[in-house]
Amino acid sequence: MTEPLRVGIKLSQDAPIESYKAIWKIADEARFDHCWAMDHLASIGSIGDDRAIFDGWELLAAMAVATSHVRIGLLVTGITYRNPALLAKIATTVDHLSDGRLEFGIGAAWAANEHDMYGISGLDHRVGLFSEGLQVIRSLWTQERTNFDGRYYKMSNAIANPKPVQTPYPPIWIGASGPATLKLTARHADVWNASGGTVEKALAVSQQLDEACAAIGRDPREIRRSVQVPAGEDPGEIVDRVHAFAEAGFTEVIIILSGGNMPTNPDPVNTAAMLAEKVLPELRG
Image 1 (cartoon, rainbow, N blue to C red):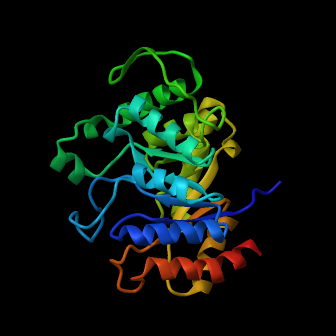
Image 2: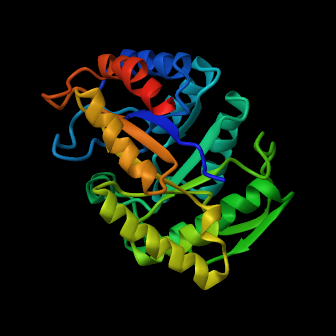
């Protein structure tokens, strides 16, 4: 049986808080499948690191209360920013606030500028932190007590109550592209998020994920494939790009909205309204 196509929208950075609120409303009323923000401490990309950005998890908590239908998440939260016990607690809180609509996106973190300017350690050991952090979070979500004696994290008879609304826990989305993180994706993920690029590039990495699953005896079909694509001004062109990924087996497509820094797409709210009116119905059809 073919998996249905699920479509989300994402506003990440360089936008006033009113734009976030408006886009959450559009996503919920239009019945997009999911709505996303990101987890960074400073802005990223060619716009420079001094542009406006809000805390991802607090945006997500507000999104949980402001919406009723759409599923919500961060693509993706960085493991180096928070102790995994704190991250598990925050995520559980958002899952309860949303009545079980959280999609838990997580990655190993990568932005060197943030780690340098804030003195955050761990970037050189991010794969090890990621591996241990995933184990700790899953244990805290499912076990009455967690004991863990790792290289980076130690838990002693740790309690994490309440548990998430969703059982055994919210779906885990892992953003990964390298061999080490793909191995962790094969072991822990419900959904893999490709780093973008062309269909051909995403398919090549998807094949590597299949091989990582085979190495541990996991059926790769258990892991849904997701990708982020930038929004443009032409609805037909957006539909064609989404269809290309869907035909390649990607069942979760997130359309990224500009935060005002792209001259060709300066208004994320108007773009979201266009996607709801002209793109989502075509994709549903």
